[in-house]
Picture 1: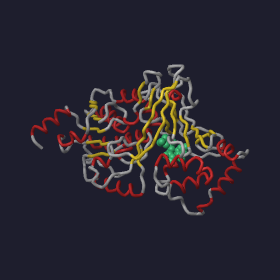
Picture 2: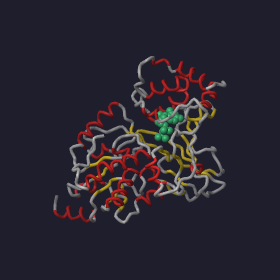
Picture 3: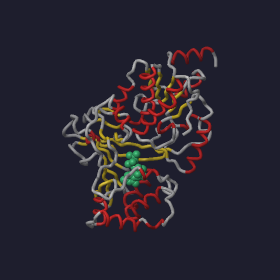
Length: 401
Ligand code: UDP
């Protein structure tokens, strides 16, 4: 590296001992911990003009409603450490998410629960009767363990409910043969033989009182954290000292310049619309199960924070259209087919050769992490990797997962 380049790199770092690429939950949590607990100087950069990654929210000036710019985010966890940690930066309202899905001109409760089953089959069923009926409908696989999303879904809810609520929605969401999709996608959704209709099973749930961006502002407001927005890591990479610790939370295939081929990602286009009515759909998220409806779901943001003041006669909705992400798009979801998994393993092998590189978050580790899982993983990495590293008892930041 030329001396001038190196000087420019050091100037930009301004004494930072670690560079964090990406100001989403993984990066912000590590930045906050390293600054607060270890007293080390941290530089956080993000290519986008805002903090918060895909959890970024902002106030819509017309309706006074907090928009989730990259689709709906809902806080839920059973991990008390994560919940306590988040409470350092925000209070939460009492929002508990209930899901709904529209199919055949009717609206059903989601995730599939006893109410959904009774309504769908037009019968009054006890938990045992419903269980027996679904077990029969799910028996087509025999003893064979489910190997993909379709088989897993059928084993959980039987073919009729799969075809109504999962097949079309997943086809729109993933545009990938359901035999190629991992079973764990559908394990995110509980199936219940009770009338409990909450979307998540988690103990702790709510929405931050002032939106997600306010949470990030507080997390990153430490005097030892410097934040630079609109900076692309790949524009500065060659200026940085070779031994600088880097936490990289952007897409892992990009880090290695796609050398092992592109990973499959999905992105979402969100069509926002202000409506001159107080309430469009009576709930925060309405899913559309049929393939004939081009969007997957509609979010009406005001319902996430009913306690907040907003325009009483207007509401704001966002329709979500899912599509394959090209390199220039913002990736949202790892598709994670068998082929992707093989590609990812090659990237992991390459990453393990770089002692100063730490991959994290949904994009950096190519895992369908929820916010609480990204925060939990960052808290764990702080303890198991970063504390030992900065205390001198561990030489490498690379991880085995
Ligand atoms: N899913 C479905 N029907 C629905 C909702 C979800 O088939 O009405 C499936 C679909 O494959 C989806 C996955 O379950 O990708 C996970 O859904 P979730 O609501 O957790 O997705 P996210 O909010 O992360 O987009």
